[in-house]
Length: 363
Ligand code: SF4
Ligand code: SF4
Image (cartoon, rainbow, N blue to C red):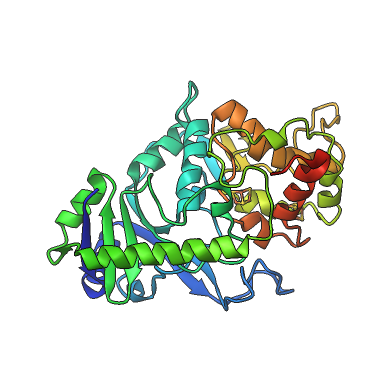
């Protein structure tokens, strides 16, 4: 794909002007606490002094967009599959919008949400509209936190697909890779740009290598099965693990808050809620959380997974086994949000290791 070098001043001028015409979102740093007890959900990494939050870009704040860190706290899916959305009466129109700062873990997760909401026999029209109207400008991660583990599952720290433009931030500007016609149109609208020089591509390679090394070093102590396995295979060591005692130790510190579900870019479960009165009717789609006791509960009050450890096991088996069987995609991209956001400080990597180790199955 074609690549260009664009000076940061030129890029900011273009995005500042664009943001006045089209709703544009990007990551911004914030040190504001989300929770009063200062848990990890506020600072995703003890080495980092702030977290990243999606905000609306405007010509005044365009210089503060963050291009050289990692993913924001909220997953990219919120732009396509919002927490709560009316589906009846149907939303007939979605205005075009731009998202800047998507990372590879979130872009790969679009394979899962697309498969569930549009690439099957039953389509979600609003999800489809939002996907069509979005322009996605992604970035290479450069400062992953201690919870990111994409490389452990064979995923990269930089985007390879599902973007319109990808930016690699360098001191004075960006290497911009075109990923689609939408992206090409943006590049045509920027007057000052240069074809990428060989030296810039070497710098991009070294940035990518450096980030990969950070993720690999942070995860070197975890011996997960089939490390770096092909993404769409079911790890053999996940077979026959429904009754594993490892799930019980995982669930021991779980407070059933649902943060792991809410922050996950591939969680797709939702509830439908009806509101009716004499004069109107509406149906709303709301995220559902499989760690909640009420999840999948039937009208009789019976739950298929009444015990917490069963729900915990189900969440992980869903990601690494059921989604692979049903969708052909591993339902975890290694973003690490379910680890950084867990108030019980449960590190899923340790739990998986424990489960895999049973019967001496891990490699
Ligand atoms: S984030 Fe942690 S405590 Fe909350 S539901 Fe998930 S596993 Fe349980
Ligand atoms: S399961 Fe956890 S690490 Fe995997 S994609 Fe979801 S939030 Fe990220």
